[in-house]
Image 1 (cartoon, one colour):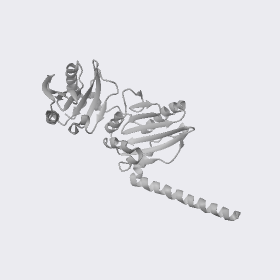
Image 2: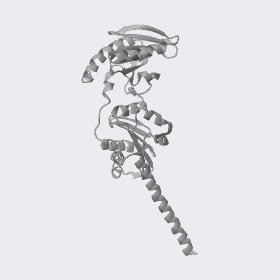
Image 3: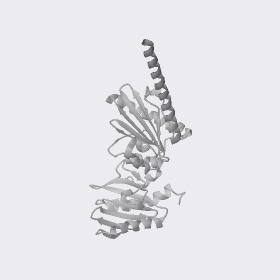
Image 4: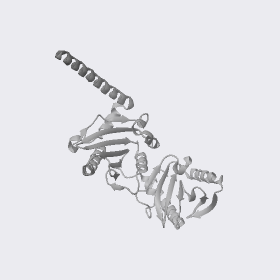
Length: 321
């Protein structure tokens, strides 16, 4: 009887072993179908040294592309697609009672990586100088560096989590290597009265208008009013005028009031909409400025910004002129 029981155990262990190998091979095949070996190795090279951080790998890394990102983050994948998401490596670690997840999103370019980073940050967050910039929450730390958007989350004893997250983030940042600055286009915004860390990059359907994409946004404190400034770049002045006319036409269909304005040498329009409120729209060379919720000092602010933008555009993009 004992020999029979041992035989059953042996057979069961053999079957489980074979199943484990097959599952592992299938996983590797699946990853091979998703990314090439070179692409996988490029992402794997960004993972930190486990021994230095006293971390234990819970399971092999998983890779994701556009075809299967929904499987990992469900509906949140849609906003990543708006910024031309390329691929992702997701890894789970453990250190004692702490469980930690690392997600490294390859967005292809710094501008796209900033776009998704800015979509998920708020000026009210706590920021840290990891990568270009990092933002900290109670159980998470996200940062931007190069074409990568890195997200770390951890669960466990609070003090351990607070100590581990920054060290882990810095280790990943060191693996990525070169630290760029924010996208050059953010320098188109005047610093005076700008709300820190309010800048955003919206690639598709900014302010609800497809023809305005892509657009850069920033919030300003104009008196007691928090106003939103959008700067929409164009190829040339003709395209800027077409966008202005398209925006004007979209408001002429209703009972909204539109009047002409003249600010610092630019002919624009003021829109007073029943549903969208008041906004000023000004074309400045190859940029369209849209100021929503303008405060008492809005026209003075716009005049300053128009003058600044004319000078700054030549400095930043003189090779494109």
